[in-house]
Image 1 (cartoon, rainbow over the protein chains, first blue to last red):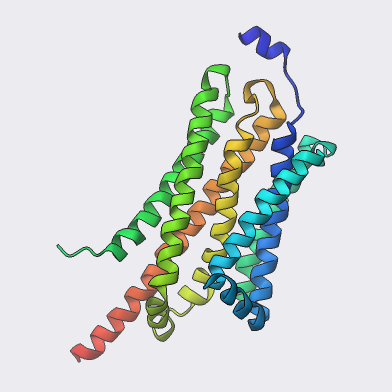
Image 2: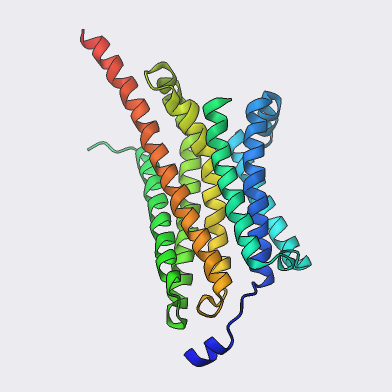
Length: 110
Length: 161
């Protein structure tokens, strides 16, 4: 089994993996942008509260819907496969780092 | 002993979060030297991470919406208002990132990690980021908790004078 596994070595990612990784990268950036927008525009915060009962609940539902929706679209269209796996990985890590630091720095300084 | 359901929900939120982080760490360590025989363990740990984070999301979300406003008022009147303004504001949105990463982990671990270096690197990235962001969220929770504590201690000291 080990021999056949090594022989079948590959560096390509499947359509679902690359699609959902790309979707996650977009979703985490969207999450931070939406947090900034809610903080900057109380009307948006109130609107989101009116939709789901609490702005945080609506925010979470938007994030999940975007992650799942884009994930299936990117998987079906095989968009993620057009990006080299290492580049996709770097972009994904960069997106998460920017999104996470973006939240902390916004609430610290803005 | 008087432990209310609100206490249990809050403690369950933290416990599920830690379990999710530990499961992600398990995936990270197994993926470092992935072999065909470890594939099942990696996928199981990834699923545990996703389910634990989902449970942490539900418990934490319910507690945040139902019970946090009273604690927020205490924190803002106390000596550590930044426990809400900075740490809770960051935590409540950073948690979404950890959650999304946890849901991504079982999808990425379906690849044959022992035969695919790119997939292995990707799983290491996803699992590592879950651990880092998850621990940051846990730490923020401790600071928020302390923000409440210092506010209550100050109020108690005033009454005691």
